[in-house]
Length: 557
Image (cartoon, rainbow, N blue to C red; front, side):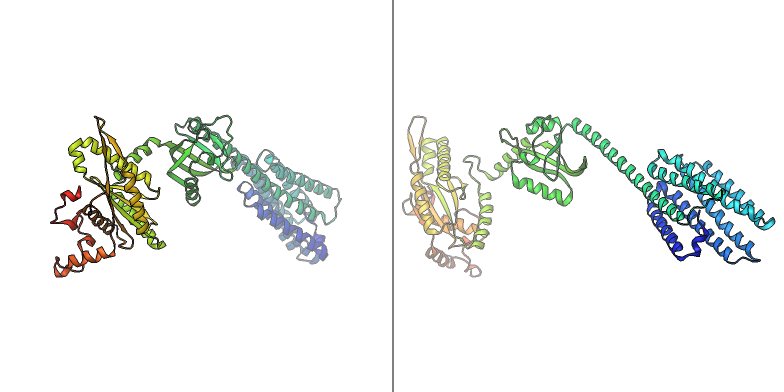
């Protein structure tokens, strides 16, 4: 294909070498696609061998003499290799369109065999320069014609536009070779033009393969989405696909539409429209962002119509859907389960009669609040209430009336206090109150208002008899201790003092009481325990341990 004259002028040689390098770079870039890898390797090898053959031809012209036959032999061997690789490239193009049919390679072997025989015969056995000159034309003519046929077979394959372009260039080369037969020679630069055109054809082939793969991938995505939509529609669970960027719902099944209360044919909502708790939604998305998958995550949802909250169990994955990054979320209704859990939780922390918190919850929660108050250097107080002469009420009117009084007492206490205060039933007719951010003076005022409010309670018996009740209240505060058990016991001591001083009154446990109890205990305890009063002993869990040996029956009432 080349002209040996290019080696006689530096500028023409540099131009041709540059165009050949461009061809090699484009070919190497195209080797990434397996569909055209083998034929492109053969083509690149053919162009390099052809260039070497033309270079040897130029050397032969420069070293004419007795050794010219040897130069011609070398030239024709490289030339034959080039044409053989060209034929193999054509066969590879044909084979790649017919499942690697090896029968496509026989023309290349025939052409190579005949060429080898002719070269040996007319360069070694019967040297004939005229026939050798014609072989320089006939062999490339047959090779490029076969290449054009092989490229034509790719017109229905993945690289059809690049193959069509390369076929046109191959036909142009065939025409140029035919012109040589009639002694019509084109300028030297035509070789560089052919190199560049073949380089472009390689790039077009690669582009065709990539576009074909992209179309196949798009088709696979469409098929996947169709199958996914069928699965979603048939699913017994509510399933929603929403776009990750703006939360817009892209697909939902009938079960999801019924659960969330929207029209399946007109989805104009985003997924966040159905979250009843923004913090709950944020926690879900943070876990999704970290793990790309969430399993059995409890979410509090609502419908856009009535805003009634309900609980769902969500499992979500991040997927590709219609070229969008989306969230695939499946839900399961657990509202009834959560209701049962709430009932069980309330039963564990609530008193069944008054619905107030029980002693266990009070001690656990108040311990946390005391730790928080210590960090903030905030005061707090504890009240202990006890219904006065409650045993007489039970004995006179019966336990049914006694229960009603306890319920009314609990309700009145809760209504008289703040939402942040904790009220608990300690046991029997005794109640505990924790007052955060309240010092002892303020606590005494709160206790006094509470005492007065409770004194207004009236319960009617079956005979319409009016039954009233009063309470005695003991107060302890953060100035005494930061231990919940100690606060309860010291409030109990103050309560005993209120009972002792006439009932229906409020008494404060102060530091003087603490010193008196410490002195009293130091005379009655073993030497090893002289510095520990039973009030502050964690092992002493009796409700009124400080009153052992005293006649407390009437006082406790």
